[in-house]
Image 1 (spheres, rainbow, N blue to C red):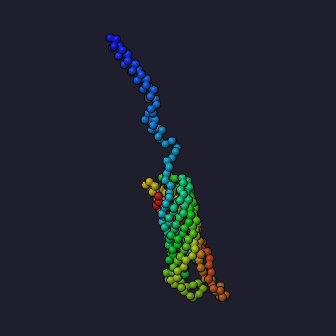
Image 2 (cartoon, helix red, strand yellow):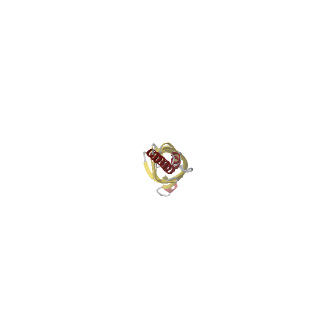
Image 3 (tube, helix red, strand yellow):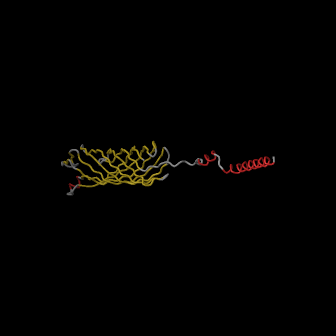
Length: 231
Protein backbone atom coordinates (compact mmCIF):
# COMPACT_ATOMS: atom_id res chain seq x y z
CA UNK A 1 0.00 0.00 0.00
CA UNK A 2 2.81 2.40 0.85
CA UNK A 3 4.42 1.68 -2.55
CA UNK A 4 1.13 2.41 -4.33
CA UNK A 5 0.77 5.73 -2.50
CA UNK A 6 4.36 6.69 -3.36
CA UNK A 7 3.83 5.95 -7.06
CA UNK A 8 0.56 7.97 -7.10
CA UNK A 9 2.32 10.90 -5.42
CA UNK A 10 5.14 10.83 -8.01
CA UNK A 11 2.66 10.76 -10.90
CA UNK A 12 0.76 13.73 -9.42
CA UNK A 13 3.97 15.76 -9.02
CA UNK A 14 5.10 14.91 -12.57
CA UNK A 15 1.71 15.97 -14.01
CA UNK A 16 1.76 19.30 -12.14
CA UNK A 17 5.35 19.98 -13.25
CA UNK A 18 4.56 19.25 -16.91
CA UNK A 19 1.50 21.52 -16.88
CA UNK A 20 3.47 24.39 -15.37
CA UNK A 21 6.27 23.97 -17.91
CA UNK A 22 3.80 24.06 -20.82
CA UNK A 23 2.19 27.23 -19.45
CA UNK A 24 5.62 28.90 -19.31
CA UNK A 25 6.78 27.77 -22.80
CA UNK A 26 3.57 28.35 -24.78
CA UNK A 27 3.61 32.19 -24.51
CA UNK A 28 7.14 32.16 -25.89
CA UNK A 29 5.96 30.54 -29.17
CA UNK A 30 4.14 33.00 -31.46
CA UNK A 31 0.83 31.94 -32.91
CA UNK A 32 0.65 31.38 -36.69
CA UNK A 33 -1.60 34.46 -37.01
CA UNK A 34 1.03 36.62 -35.30
CA UNK A 35 3.74 35.32 -37.68
CA UNK A 36 1.54 36.16 -40.68
CA UNK A 37 0.85 39.66 -39.35
CA UNK A 38 4.55 40.36 -38.83
CA UNK A 39 5.49 39.12 -42.32
CA UNK A 40 2.81 41.21 -44.06
CA UNK A 41 3.97 44.59 -45.53
CA UNK A 42 3.30 47.64 -43.42
CA UNK A 43 0.19 49.61 -44.39
CA UNK A 44 0.93 52.43 -46.85
CA UNK A 45 4.26 50.96 -48.02
CA UNK A 46 4.00 50.28 -51.79
CA UNK A 47 6.02 47.48 -53.29
CA UNK A 48 8.89 48.62 -55.52
CA UNK A 49 7.97 48.67 -59.21
CA UNK A 50 10.31 48.24 -62.21
CA UNK A 51 11.52 51.46 -63.82
CA UNK A 52 12.45 51.81 -67.53
CA UNK A 53 15.95 50.95 -68.69
CA UNK A 54 15.64 50.52 -72.47
CA UNK A 55 12.98 51.62 -74.96
CA UNK A 56 12.64 51.36 -78.77
CA UNK A 57 10.03 53.60 -80.37
CA UNK A 58 8.58 54.52 -83.75
CA UNK A 59 8.32 58.29 -84.14
CA UNK A 60 6.65 60.72 -86.57
CA UNK A 61 7.64 64.40 -86.71
CA UNK A 62 8.60 67.12 -89.18
CA UNK A 63 11.60 69.36 -89.77
CA UNK A 64 11.75 72.62 -91.66
CA UNK A 65 12.10 72.95 -95.43
CA UNK A 66 14.07 75.80 -97.02
CA UNK A 67 10.82 77.31 -98.34
CA UNK A 68 9.31 77.48 -94.85
CA UNK A 69 7.06 74.43 -95.15
CA UNK A 70 7.27 71.29 -93.02
CA UNK A 71 9.29 68.26 -94.09
CA UNK A 72 7.60 65.05 -92.79
CA UNK A 73 9.97 62.56 -91.16
CA UNK A 74 9.62 59.11 -89.60
CA UNK A 75 12.24 57.54 -87.37
CA UNK A 76 13.28 54.80 -84.99
CA UNK A 77 14.20 56.14 -81.58
CA UNK A 78 16.24 54.23 -78.96
CA UNK A 79 16.29 55.44 -75.33
CA UNK A 80 18.87 54.01 -72.91
CA UNK A 81 18.36 55.08 -69.30
CA UNK A 82 21.68 54.63 -67.55
CA UNK A 83 20.14 55.98 -64.32
CA UNK A 84 16.51 55.17 -63.61
CA UNK A 85 15.50 55.81 -60.01
CA UNK A 86 12.04 55.76 -58.46
CA UNK A 87 11.14 59.32 -59.50
CA UNK A 88 13.94 60.43 -61.86
CA UNK A 89 15.47 59.13 -65.09
CA UNK A 90 18.63 60.15 -66.96
CA UNK A 91 20.02 58.63 -70.12
CA UNK A 92 21.13 58.90 -73.72
CA UNK A 93 19.27 58.31 -76.97
CA UNK A 94 19.89 57.57 -80.65
CA UNK A 95 17.53 58.38 -83.50
CA UNK A 96 17.65 57.60 -87.22
CA UNK A 97 14.99 58.55 -89.75
CA UNK A 98 14.06 59.49 -93.27
CA UNK A 99 11.60 61.65 -95.21
CA UNK A 100 10.96 63.61 -98.40
CA UNK A 101 11.27 67.30 -99.22
CA UNK A 102 10.12 69.36 -102.19
CA UNK A 103 11.55 72.61 -103.55
CA UNK A 104 10.68 74.43 -106.77
CA UNK A 105 8.92 71.37 -108.13
CA UNK A 106 11.82 69.02 -107.40
CA UNK A 107 11.85 66.34 -104.71
CA UNK A 108 14.63 65.02 -102.51
CA UNK A 109 15.08 61.98 -100.30
CA UNK A 110 16.21 62.93 -96.82
CA UNK A 111 17.93 60.90 -94.10
CA UNK A 112 19.17 61.98 -90.69
CA UNK A 113 20.72 60.70 -87.47
CA UNK A 114 20.85 62.22 -83.99
CA UNK A 115 22.51 61.42 -80.66
CA UNK A 116 21.21 63.06 -77.51
CA UNK A 117 20.70 63.14 -73.77
CA UNK A 118 17.41 62.84 -71.82
CA UNK A 119 16.29 63.86 -68.34
CA UNK A 120 12.84 63.33 -66.89
CA UNK A 121 10.54 62.52 -64.01
CA UNK A 122 8.22 59.54 -63.55
CA UNK A 123 5.67 58.08 -61.14
CA UNK A 124 6.39 54.30 -60.99
CA UNK A 125 3.50 51.85 -61.08
CA UNK A 126 1.72 49.50 -63.42
CA UNK A 127 0.84 52.66 -65.37
CA UNK A 128 3.85 55.00 -65.20
CA UNK A 129 3.30 58.62 -66.31
CA UNK A 130 6.47 60.44 -67.38
CA UNK A 131 7.71 63.85 -68.55
CA UNK A 132 11.05 64.30 -70.34
CA UNK A 133 13.31 66.93 -71.85
CA UNK A 134 15.85 66.24 -74.59
CA UNK A 135 18.86 67.75 -76.41
CA UNK A 136 20.33 66.07 -79.51
CA UNK A 137 22.69 66.77 -82.42
CA UNK A 138 23.71 64.97 -85.58
CA UNK A 139 23.70 64.97 -89.37
CA UNK A 140 21.05 65.60 -92.04
CA UNK A 141 21.63 64.46 -95.61
CA UNK A 142 19.61 64.65 -98.81
CA UNK A 143 19.71 63.49 -102.43
CA UNK A 144 17.82 65.09 -105.32
CA UNK A 145 15.44 62.65 -107.00
CA UNK A 146 15.17 64.80 -110.15
CA UNK A 147 16.41 68.05 -111.68
CA UNK A 148 16.29 71.33 -109.75
CA UNK A 149 16.51 74.78 -111.30
CA UNK A 150 18.56 77.10 -109.12
CA UNK A 151 16.31 80.05 -108.19
CA UNK A 152 17.21 83.25 -110.09
CA UNK A 153 19.15 81.39 -112.79
CA UNK A 154 18.58 79.05 -115.69
CA UNK A 155 21.08 76.51 -114.34
CA UNK A 156 19.84 73.11 -113.22
CA UNK A 157 21.34 70.40 -111.05
CA UNK A 158 20.31 66.76 -110.65
CA UNK A 159 21.36 63.74 -108.64
CA UNK A 160 23.22 65.92 -106.15
CA UNK A 161 23.79 64.66 -102.60
CA UNK A 162 24.76 66.84 -99.67
CA UNK A 163 25.01 66.61 -95.88
CA UNK A 164 24.86 69.20 -93.13
CA UNK A 165 24.64 69.53 -89.36
CA UNK A 166 21.39 69.32 -87.42
CA UNK A 167 20.36 69.70 -83.79
CA UNK A 168 17.09 69.37 -81.89
CA UNK A 169 15.55 70.07 -78.49
CA UNK A 170 12.16 69.12 -77.21
CA UNK A 171 9.76 68.00 -74.51
CA UNK A 172 7.42 65.04 -74.36
CA UNK A 173 4.97 63.44 -71.95
CA UNK A 174 3.26 60.07 -71.94
CA UNK A 175 2.60 56.82 -70.13
CA UNK A 176 4.30 53.43 -69.91
CA UNK A 177 2.05 50.42 -69.28
CA UNK A 178 3.73 47.36 -67.73
CA UNK A 179 1.99 44.45 -69.45
CA UNK A 180 4.24 41.53 -68.41
CA UNK A 181 6.81 41.80 -65.61
CA UNK A 182 9.42 44.43 -66.52
CA UNK A 183 8.19 44.63 -70.15
CA UNK A 184 6.11 47.69 -71.02
CA UNK A 185 4.53 49.56 -73.92
CA UNK A 186 4.93 53.32 -74.18
CA UNK A 187 2.91 56.13 -75.75
CA UNK A 188 4.19 59.70 -75.92
CA UNK A 189 3.30 63.08 -77.42
CA UNK A 190 5.54 66.10 -77.51
CA UNK A 191 7.05 69.18 -79.10
CA UNK A 192 10.38 69.39 -80.92
CA UNK A 193 12.35 72.25 -82.49
CA UNK A 194 14.85 71.27 -85.19
CA UNK A 195 17.55 73.46 -86.73
CA UNK A 196 19.82 72.59 -89.64
CA UNK A 197 22.21 74.45 -91.94
CA UNK A 198 21.09 75.01 -95.52
CA UNK A 199 22.92 76.31 -98.56
CA UNK A 200 21.00 78.70 -100.83
CA UNK A 201 21.63 80.86 -103.88
CA UNK A 202 21.39 84.64 -103.75
CA UNK A 203 20.99 86.05 -107.29
CA UNK A 204 21.66 89.63 -106.13
CA UNK A 205 25.01 88.65 -104.64
CA UNK A 206 25.87 86.81 -107.85
CA UNK A 207 24.95 89.86 -110.00
CA UNK A 208 27.48 91.91 -108.06
CA UNK A 209 30.24 89.49 -108.88
CA UNK A 210 29.93 87.34 -105.77
CA UNK A 211 29.65 83.59 -105.66
CA UNK A 212 25.94 83.83 -104.87
CA UNK A 213 26.14 80.87 -102.49
CA UNK A 214 24.93 81.65 -98.97
CA UNK A 215 24.14 79.63 -95.85
CA UNK A 216 21.25 79.99 -93.42
CA UNK A 217 19.71 78.17 -90.47
CA UNK A 218 16.36 76.48 -91.05
CA UNK A 219 14.40 76.22 -87.78
CA UNK A 220 11.05 74.51 -87.44
CA UNK A 221 8.69 73.67 -84.54
CA UNK A 222 6.69 70.46 -84.72
CA UNK A 223 4.55 68.18 -82.61
CA UNK A 224 5.50 64.52 -82.63
CA UNK A 225 3.97 61.16 -81.82
CA UNK A 226 5.93 58.20 -80.43
CA UNK A 227 4.93 54.60 -79.62
CA UNK A 228 7.32 51.93 -78.42
CA UNK A 229 8.18 48.92 -76.26
CA UNK A 230 10.79 48.55 -73.56
CA UNK A 231 12.13 46.82 -70.46
